[in-house]
Every structure is written in C-alpha cells, then in structure tokens.
Image (cartoon, rainbow, N blue to C red):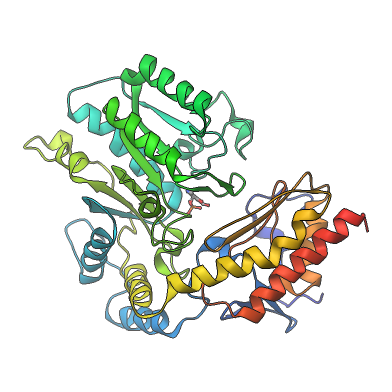
Length: 422
Ligand SMILES: Cc1ncc(COP(=O)(O)O)c(C=O)c1O
C-alpha cells in the first residue's frame, strides 16, 4: 500500500509489538459507522471496535455534538476543589445503573488505573479498619487486568502477556476459577489458610477478555460471592471489557445476579471516543474511608480525573443506551455470530467456537504466523486482530447485518484456509 506523507514511524513506540519485526500499522484517516477508512481510500469493516470501545459505531452524531458543546463551554478543569455538572451527573447515572449499593464513583483515565485504584481501595479498606497485612489478592488463571505494575500482578502470571515479569511483581494467589468441585475446593482451601493476608478477590465476570476470550458461567461468580462473604473479603469485578452491554446485559454482574463490592469500568464508557474510567465502590467500602481522620482519605487524584469532555461523551453514550435498542442489537449480533461462525466448528484445526453477547470466538489449536493471519483478514476487507490462538469478533452494536455477515464469512474463509494449509 502507499503510505501518506505523514507516515513516519521512526519516533513512535507501538503497543504490544517487537519493534524490530512489527508490520507497519495501517494508516487510518477516517472512521464511519463500523468502518475504518485507510489513507489509500480502502474501507475495512471493523471487527474489534477499537479494543471493544466503539459500541455505538464510530462518529455517532449525539456524542459528537455533546463533546463539541462541552469543548466550547469548558474542556477540562481539575477535580481537586472544583466540580462540574458532567462528572456529577455521570456518577449519579452510573450509580443508578449498577446493581446494589455500588454508589461511589472515583474517576480516572484508563482501565489499568481504575484497577490500580480498586486494589488500593481494597488494601486501604483493611488499613482503615485497623487491620494490617491484608495486601494480597486472589485472581484467576486466564485473567487480564491491565499493564500498570499493580494490575500486571493480578494478570495470569504464566499464560498472560506479562509472564516475563514472573517473580518480580507483588505476589498474589492466581488460581483456577471455581468451575467444578476440585477448583471450588482449591479456592475454599486457599481462603481457609490465607484469608488473613488477602484484601479481596478480583475477576473479570463471565468473560476473561485479553487473556483469551475465555467464558465461565454465573455459578462461578456466585461461588466467589459466597466465599468472599464467608471470609469477609472484598469482591472486585473488573467490567472494563464486559461492561456496557458487551456480554448481553448492561453489566455482566447483572446476568450473574451477583453484586460485587467494587466494580471497574472503562472502554465503552465514552462510546469509544475519549479516555475515561471509573472505580465504583459500595457503601461498605466507602464507609471505611469516612472519618474525622485525614489519614483515612483515599490519596489518589489523577490530573485528568473526571475530564469534562470525556464525561460529556459518557453521558451522551448513556443517552444512546436509553434511546436506542442497544441490548436488542447485542442479542441479534449474538445470534448472527453463532450462526455465522458455526461452519468453523467442524474444521480440524478449530478447538472451540463460542459466543457470548456480542463476542464471537473461534479458538484454534495453534496459530503459526499471527501477522500473516492478520494480513489475510485485511486482504478480505476486514479488520480482525487474532492473538494467541484466538480469532475473535467484538463489533460495534450498530453494525449492519450485512457488515456482520462479511466479518463472519471472512473468519470462516480464512480459518478454512489455515485448515487446508493453503
Ligand atoms: C478487563 C480489563 N481490565 C483492564 C484493562 C486495561 O485497560 P486499559 O488498556 O484502558 O488500561 C483491560 C484492557 O483490555 C481489560 O480488558
């Protein structure tokens, strides 16, 4: 492809890439609905929605005009000593949408930081109650919670992307999710012996995303709630991927019928337009910080916390969830993904085909050349970015039936080619 004049990679460091070997990223000049427009005029149907953020498709006019209005009024003010309507309204709306008494919203700018804040809240919760030594977490194999050091330490330490750091990060208990008798006993044994050093349990509910698009059922989450209650531990749901309709309900915890003590949100919070994250705590957690003693305050305050542009985008995004039939669209996508990906099930190199909400996964036995596979999809006119052994689709909820069919046909075709070795 021809690259535009501005395309010079000599000063950029790309994400998750060996810079010596990385294939040049595609120059994108515009987005439109569920499509990426490249510098050479080609359009790709986007199967990933920019790391699962662009739930309403790109360039939704309602979000655009909300951000434009906000930009004229006030792009940003610091959150220390100043407050603004967008942030307070958004906090109130999130508290109303979330189940139970998840009602105190702490804003930040990225998912990883929201996880850091959740972990810090959990550790300080115990300190504020006068109990020292509860600094560790129970986390799960296959889990991914971000790239900052605290969050890295609760990712899967072996199969996860931060395996290089194994042994160098704070040590937590990373075990199997309790999905059968053996794993349930392992969890309760662990808590029986180590609860007094554990601050909380952290999990991505229903779907572990970047760790391999692995699904578990609600019973596992109910067990976690039961065990957390038995040992008086805090339960943290990381809904950064699963939140805002992706798994079929507004939040995965609702489908599971489990209310955590802390929930983290980001990604689709602003409909994929601006960086924003939230760590939402219940009253049990918040009350442990409520004191006459300044030392019990949560000492955290990111510079761009509660950014007014991002809050305007998030409020507009929530308007869209209220006014447009997003969850019905997710249900339709779910059905279309299940039908469209079904032909892969019988292919010899395919280990599993699974769908949950607007997440469709074809898991292969192995992928020899990820870059070549990614390039094959681009040649088919779609942007799909397999990782590990996983080919997955997480499209915008507004994608048309025809565009979605193009995505699933491309997966069936390209995975079929791998199977035939061509
Ligand atoms: C479940 C989960 N937690 C945390 C993160 C980290 O979010 P961010 O990339 O915004 O730091 C991600 C990102 O993929 C995620 O999927």
